[in-house]
Length: 284
Ligand code: PAF
Image (tube, rainbow, N blue to C red; front, side, top):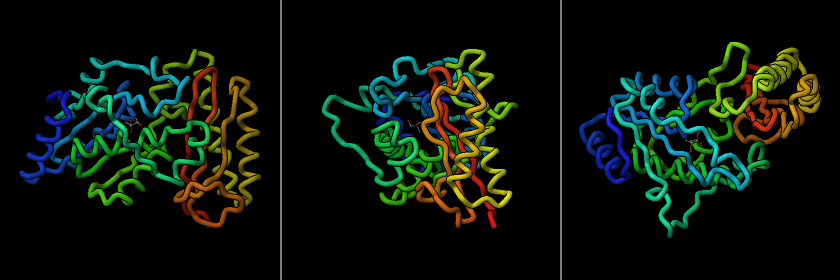
């Protein structure tokens, strides 16, 4: 496994590998790798000749007052986990990603505005911009993202479509703890009693999914069931949103008519913001 810091070097290697007919699987991350990331890396390994993982805590996707400064960083552990699975680990420096005169932003309108976009202004602009830069540097044939960040995956798929990029975007299932909590690097912020409370979000989404499966089609009532479930956990300090959304447009639904719906929520437990979602398919 080789570590690369210079975007120019990364791109030269990628172009050479592609010229030799090799496919490149890419897993972009911000580090603090957990089983969710590793499942993406293993899938990339199984489906491509070359695997590249990047680690870059991207400052432009954090709003002022968010956790950029204290975002968990564990480079040596991360490299150990990737050893034997990735061929290249790309570790760009902030100065190379965003030189002082950097002034371009990528905005995926529509999909970026609802859900988390309402609470994290500019977040998806930061994600889309850095992901497009990383795609240009790594030249992937396929890029892998986790379903936990459902809106992020939707934004990136749209970016790829709108800008005629030639790679394939693959979204892999959310990996969960045994009590249902979706794995996230931010789970490390949770105090023990908050950690115990955190699966409340998954339970709420499950109660919404059950209502849908039982035939409930009034999205307002499904939302009410999920909010009621969350209200049973006193350590959920704030519910930013929890609702049923169109799985393609991410618009909040009133009446559920399609057979595919995403139930998604964002809550604050202690001081930690948690997100999760369930895709509910095959609704009659
Ligand atoms: O999901 C993440 O870790 C980040 O948003 C990503 C895609 C690596 C962009 O910084």
